[in-house]
Image (spheres, rainbow, N blue to C red):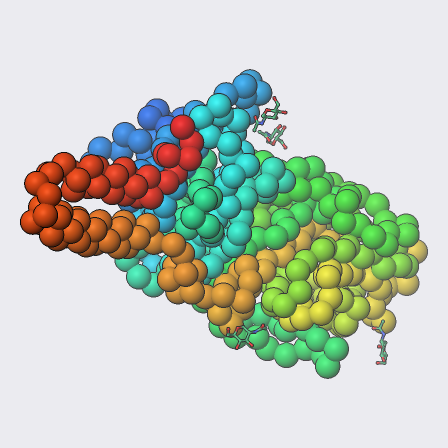
Length: 468
Ligand SMILES: *[C@@H]1O[C@H](CO)[C@@H](O)[C@H](O)[C@H]1NC(C)=O
Ligand SMILES: *[C@@H]1O[C@H](CO)[C@@H](O)[C@H](O)[C@H]1NC(C)=O
Ligand SMILES: *[C@@H]1O[C@H](CO)[C@@H](O)[C@H](O)[C@H]1NC(C)=O
Ligand SMILES: *[C@@H]1O[C@H](CO)[C@@H](O)[C@H](O)[C@H]1NC(C)=O
């Protein structure tokens, strides 16, 4: 009897524990820092249930500092574009947005660009650099149409995230349509990875403090996942356009519950919609090719979830990066703590100094089962992040200091012009005074000072002058 009571008590305890656990799993992630800004707008706008606040009316704390910034409203817009893409803030001079940070750690910084049409300003004249907390993230950027969202992962151990916009020349300007700054869950970026090269594999430490740009986020074998359906408001694209070798591969999907588990990937690392679809292959290798620019290290995150096997311990395969063996005899059941449909991810780092693309492959290993119905490899998702170079930059061999100091600082220029003007006035005083000695005429200097003032006006606000 006593034993029975104990047992019931224990079962009750387990039940309570597991139910609180599943409740906590189903809770959505709520970041400590979350700023969503609708730039150049005086009304807030809601996109996918997320409220982007207007930066033109943020009365309590102004988010940006800039001289002569302009709120631009797009004209002839296609009716179904999200509200945040209908306005932009234009910066003719260097400008910055500052966001207070309560939680140190990795922050997701997303910048939205849409080259809106306007009769007031020709957006084709935009060209600028962007830095985030001392990292160059965009250089000589023009807001090209195929780059509507650029996402960066920035380690923040200071009290704020500062995003600076710097026009690349005197005659250009910067713009942005919307900004997101969100503290990432602690488990999004781990510190350790496996680096893969022709010489084999070794441990890579210090990943968490690297600034990164998300280059590819792919839902293998599945559909596009939109921010609306993602735990961290990300976009995942289908893999079809990147799949290069796929003899005998097929897509598969799973309608059961994805079993998130401590020690594996969390729902924030990858949502159900990524793990419940995959591409599988028999007796062959599958390869994907991702074009990248040379001269950077890249983080390759591969997402696995065995939604295809009928039983545990039957799926072993090899993982290759750029043709190099990155993981031999990957035992997906063991890695997922002997649970089917439980997600797991592996981070690899490659140093891409020459190549123009990264090739990711999975294929049979020596341990592959002889079961004719079994599959030999699976992949559910892949992400590729560019890592900052030695200059702390994600876009070229320049540091943020170089960008900020080389930029034409118009305030200094206007001070210089004012000084020159004063000298001219002083000189003209002198000349007039000299002249007065000979002929008594006294309107010469007044005219000259008027000229100087007009010049000063033009140079000090060249942007306005150019756009009239
Ligand atoms: C700007 O206008 C052109 C021509 O009317 C149109 O093709 C283009 O899509 C517009 N761009 C945007 C961002 O609305
Ligand atoms: C969200 O996911 C569901 C189920 O996969 C899909 O039917 C729906 O269209 C998605 N919604 C958006 C906005 O992507
Ligand atoms: C199979 O095992 C041999 C010997 O251990 C090894 O040299 C070879 O690389 C392995 N092949 C694969 C595909 O894992
Ligand atoms: C980057 O620039 C620095 C200084 O300007 C130079 O010393 C270094 O060699 C450059 N590196 C590359 C990869 O070009």
